[in-house]
Image (cartoon, rainbow, N blue to C red; front, side, top):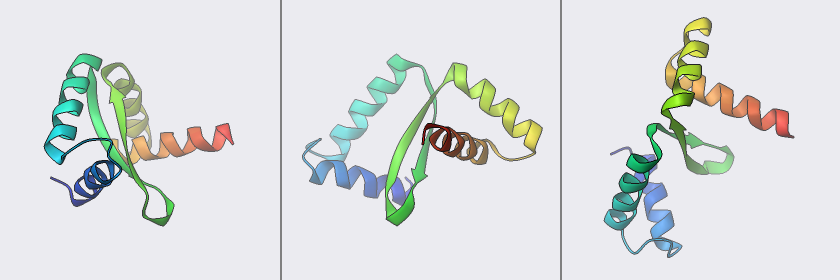
Length: 90
């Protein structure tokens, strides 16, 4: 498991959102399967903040198209598109 993901899980456990890492993982796995989540990217924001970003199977096609057109990886494409969306909202 990615160390950033472990740190994020520990954070939600420490904030009493979940009672344990395994409880958080069980919850997320169940939610992912029911929501049609295809990809999870842990976004690293400024000052060490990290949050998971969940991408549905319908959105992943747009991401893949953007990645191919710009000759970048899927993960890089997700980050670019999310940051672009945030800038557009600001």
